[in-house]
Structure formats: structure tokens, C-alpha cells
Length: 94
Image 1 (cartoon, rainbow, N blue to C red):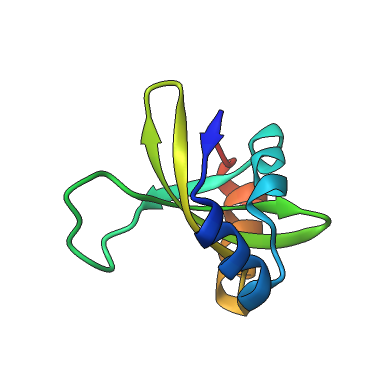
Image 2 (tube, helix red, strand yellow):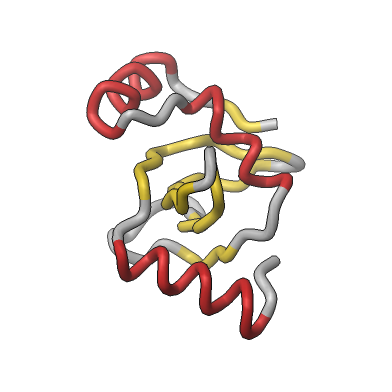
């Protein structure tokens, strides 16, 4: 189960049109994940590409135990969409 901050959820919904409450469903389908090294964090953060409502999304989250904490989520750009499809069809997403 993913946890989320309610203020961040509302801000993300307003800014990106994605509700954190819907995001957990991407774990039901193939995903591509890699460590998010864009900023030095005190915790492991992953950037996962997956499908939500038929579109690729980019999810930043921190795995915690059997679940995790959502940090941000937005629709994927063309590069991320291409990366997701390449991983899905060529090497298999996890």
C-alpha cells in the first residue's frame, strides 16, 4: 500500500491532473523503474514509468517495507513514453 501526503495530493492533482489515489493501480501492470538520482536524497527514491488510464506516467516514490510513499506523479513526456515502450517490448518491464 502506498501512503501519500494530502496537501501534495491536492497540489499534484491541480498541477498535473493526476490524483495520488489512482496511482496505486499502475503496480498491477508492467512497469519500468530506476533509482531517481536527480537530487541527492536521504532515502532511496525510484522513478517508475507505468500506465494509468492508458497513458504513461512518471511516478517518483520511496519504497517503504511492503509499500511506499508517493512523492510526485505526472504524465510522461515523449522520451519517457518511448523508454517505457522500449523496456516493455524489448527487455520486459518489472
